[in-house]
Amino acid sequence: MGPSKSHAIVFLSVGTLICCGADRPSSATMARIREAHLRMLTLDAHVEFDTRGPRSAAGRAIDPAAMDKGGLDAAVLFVSAPGTPPSFEGITAIKRLIREKRDRVGLGLAPEDAYGLEKEGRRTIFLGLGNGEAIGTDLTLLPAFYEQGVRFLKLRGDSGNAICEERGLSELGKKVVAECNRLGLVIDVGGCSARSIADVLAASQAPVVCSPGAARALCDVPGNLDEAAIVAIARAGGVVLVPFEARRLVPPGAARRAGVPDIAAHIGYLTKLAGADGVGLGSCFGGGGGVPGCGDASEVMSLTLELLRRGVGERDLEAIWGGNVMRVFKRAASLAVER
Image 1 (tube, rainbow, N blue to C red):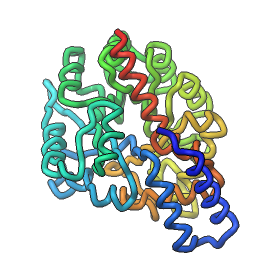
Image 2: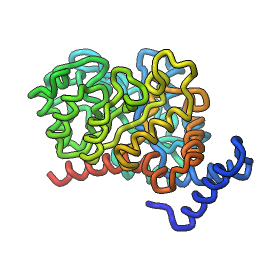
Image 3: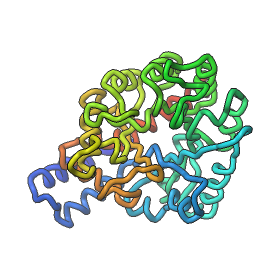
């Protein structure tokens, strides 16, 4: 559902107005930026849902009013499933909140749902499982999570597990990847070692996403990606998701606070390495994500403004803001259907 030729003219005009005007665009220019932003399908592919927090805090993870204000159409909520066997409590809580707000938001089970709900004026929530450790060694739990509505799986959490270790993807991990491909689950390799990422790319028939995926060249901290990993993920058709986490955007001890320009700088660096088709967004709101000017879903349009200010074109902006992750999602789903 790409924009028409007339839309491209609007984007060009807005970009020109920003580049040639003052630092603070006029109200008329901002109205045109909002119009351009709202035409795109915008997806935040990494929001964290803390089941241990108070209900009010959990409710903020599904905030249609904030999404409306920021022009954010969809989000992937990653939830933990602690215990053996794993608890589905977090997933149940999310689905309950969605039902309570069903006039404003809906649960997405397929890529097309985001477009359909957008036409209805509703926001879309996709479910992600925040750590493959939740399944232990029981592969039958993956179909169970799929039946519960999970469509994204983060193989590794904050530490290694039986699936992904520093030395690479285990034999169990290879089976998990194959089962994800069979079901149509989107694999997230964020936090995996370089060796594990390479192993997943070799094992998976579907492209993957990587969140968080900031550039180590701009901020050398554990978990940020080196050039080889960025290029490899993109060449396999995958997408690196830039976080909004200050600690991943600017080096430790930096004399300034991270801001929206730093998010844009990582996007620019990744685009030069991987092309715009290899870059997406995963804010990590709820798990440390948020910088001044872009602290929650209500403020994400500020990133569109910054990218336009830097001369990012219409097609690339639409791809980065959601098109690339939706492409990966569609490919994963189509491979499952083909089997």
